[in-house]
Length: 117
Image 1 (cartoon, rainbow, N blue to C red):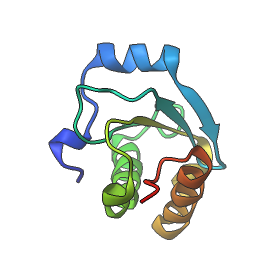
Image 2: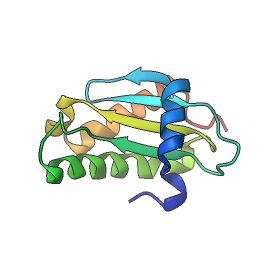
Image 3: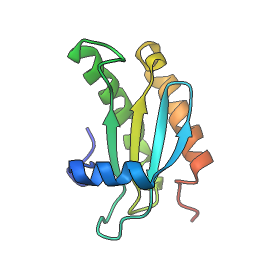
């Protein structure tokens, strides 16, 4: 589980982010990358898994846990004050954690989320 300060929690922050975000897509998910948030000390993440992905909450929660577990080891390498939202796609249900970790790392490289030092 991600630390509390690394989670995006307020609905109004999420709605504002949807308007300003840049979108990156992969096979299993889309990534919304918001502008730097000066107020937040570390990068903040949110994971959105719609009921269209799977009706069962158990499956949706599993997807969220897999995404969070794949992001957690990368936290020290990520630029501070970024806001990142993962939007799951249908293909994510069959993906393994290893596949997700590789996809996340590739999309983070593409979006230039990693620190350059």
